Image 1 (spheres, rainbow, N blue to C red):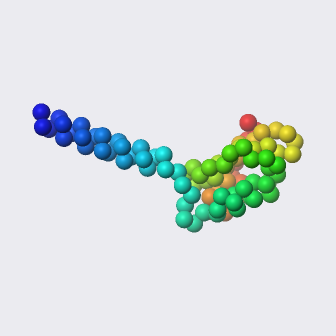
Image 2 (cartoon, rainbow, N blue to C red):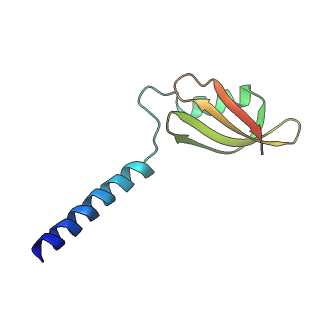
Image 3 (cartoon, one colour):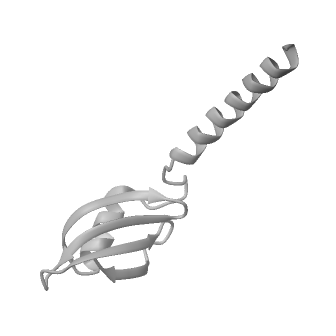
Amino acid sequence: MYHKKLTAALAIAVLGSASGVALADKPGADWITLEQAVQKAKSAGYTQLHSISADDDTWEGEGMKADGKVWEFKMDGKTGDMTKEKED
């Protein structure tokens, strides 16, 4: 009985801490700032940004270009270079 309770408590502790890490996508210490990422997106032709967030090693976002179409993009977190763009 004691062994089952200990195992369950350990599983909850491990899962709880693992999920906290998985959900905590934050810009790295050596990344460009959010403001710089917004400027880079505007320089790449985005006239409106609907979202932008940190994910793994990239800034990911969605916005509208001058052609009126909505695009999704990924930008290198350190350099701000666009690594992927696709029409939404």
